[in-house]
Image (cartoon, rainbow, N blue to C red; front, side, top):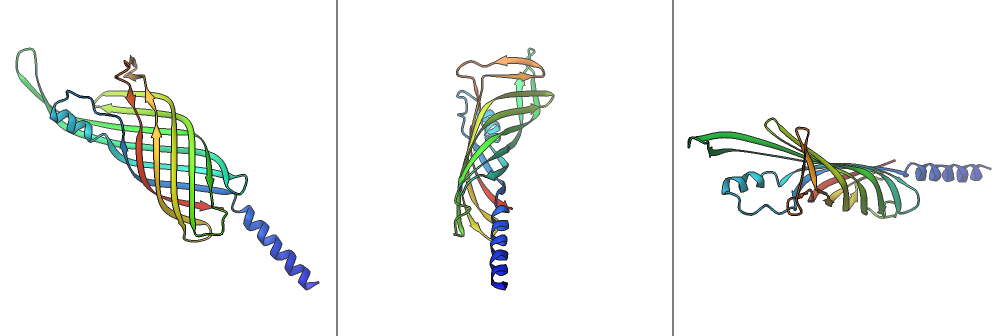
Length: 215
């Protein structure tokens, strides 16, 4: 009788442990580089100014429900932020040189449903996962009193290796790729349509440190 109770108890603990591994929360933080080409014909000062906006901090967080041994579905949010500043000079209609200090702050966010495949339920401390998401990508840029915004369909793809520090916590590096393009934006409420060679590319490559919390 005692043996049966012990067996039933161990089986119940095993079932509970499995049930507690259905959900994964994965935050990450790192650095990202925008992949769009810098326009040609710009002055050295302008090129340097734009260069400051082409790399910045990347943060994302995703939540997944595992519906079988290796696959999960959930939601993903990511955010990229960068800023640049500099002093520019130009001539007015009277030939006088006017100098001004300018600061631009850029923000690119993404949100959408996601699918993940992993070996989280395998009996190994070396964990791998890949996820893909389709959703809405939004770009916001602000220079002085001028604010530009635009949204479109975007995609996010990630590949990561993690080491199981404990049964429920994994940590490791993650490589990410986010893509999207804007053919129009609003600047202070006025819509501006871009030509074929003027579209705003929002693609970026990111390298981050990610942690997985399972329960």
